Image (tube, rainbow, N blue to C red; front, side):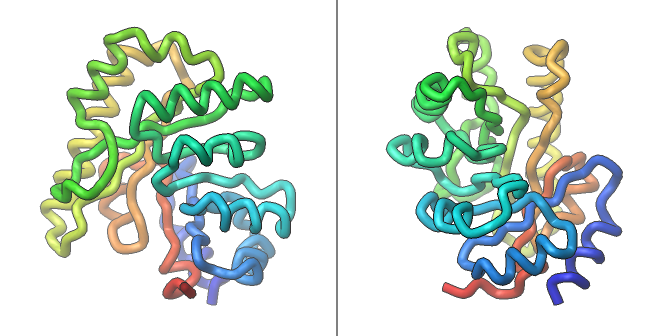
Amino acid sequence: MISDALHSIWSELPPGTKLVAISKYHPVSAISEAYACGQRLFGENHVQELIQKVEQLPKDIEWHFTGHLQTNKVKYIVPFISLIHSVDSLKLLREIDKQGKKLGRKVGCLLELHVAAEDSKYGFSPDALISLHSSGELGCLDYVDIRGLMCMATNTDDDMRISSDFSNAKSVFDVLKSRFYSDTPSFCELSMGMSDDYHLALSHGSTIVRIGTRIFGERQY
């Protein structure tokens, strides 16, 4: 049951840790059930599906976008999105800033860090993140609020590899925090950990876990 799963996960989260219920491919009825239990943060990966759900569900839901975001879709979610987890290029940051400026709305973003072994995953390398911050480019983006990092671990059963990925992500976060965000309290989020590996992520300092299957069951494509 969704209720049992949520209460089990909530009981495991350290104080201040956020749970984003990943509801992609799950029906509005399932989200409504989780909402009735008290869950308010939901994550979607596809813009069209997200917009359809936003129109049907309570307005106090805090929506997070967790999938790969194309620049031509940014304008559709900027009016309401609470946090974009998957910002993986300067081009995308500039588009978010552009659309945010049109609405006079600052948009919360996490920079996606690539630490996994698979080349297919998106994100900045650690060196690219340092270079981006050193370049001064981010100082021109008045409508982007960078709140931290997001990463996905390698898709493997090897807990040592997964732990290494999360440890590396935490190290990069700490470097960025000390070098570029020491006076920015809002740069405080490290989004990592999903249904199969969130316990490891929490042990390495995750502040946001993104859990879908453990809450809602297998996806309904």
